[in-house]
Length: 247
Image 1 (tube, rainbow, N blue to C red):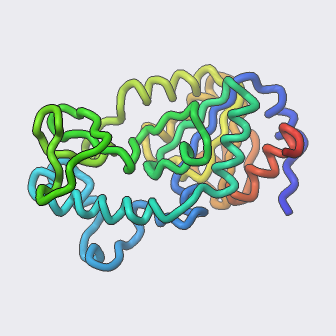
Image 2 (spheres, helix red, strand yellow):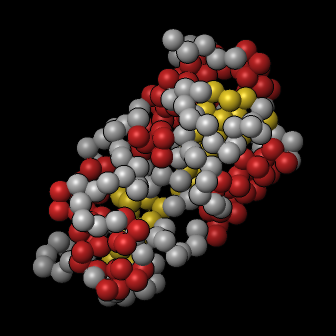
């Protein structure tokens, strides 16, 4: 049983503005492989880096679309875990809470998080390649990928590919929140992928208490004020219960 550090709980209770940043680790606890894990089945011979680029889509849009349909089918089978639920509970109790995620699986929203920045997009959504028009639905027929109802260009997943920049508004919001927060939670992320990896350092340099929740050491570990060597699904429910009281 995980017992949170009383000093950590006191810091969380004092904080007026809290930012949490999550990475692949929290999704892995729901059974989702990380992006760069080995592919299976028909996709075993491909590297994700060879499919998740604008150039790959332009060369073979059907193959890239079908790979993402395969990934979407996997995402559809998993559910948020207790870590996702605990973050949604903290948000409900603390209106100035912001959750920033690098994950594209939509599990935070499914768990109930609403004050949410999805830095790398969401695999459950689609946009068109040329104009980035959102596509809520499309006619399923012979065309793969489908075409945008507004401009006719091909649809693609609404995720950030290699070689693309993060959505400016999302990144700006995350950076500003990190600079303004009193406490920053880094959860299940390697803090190696920039610009998301800079967020806890922005927070720390502006005086925030920085907390790392990760079973593995990262570059952030030696600089964090609190380090919790535990999985998110174990640590976060205990932290939420101690911080907010039993549900």
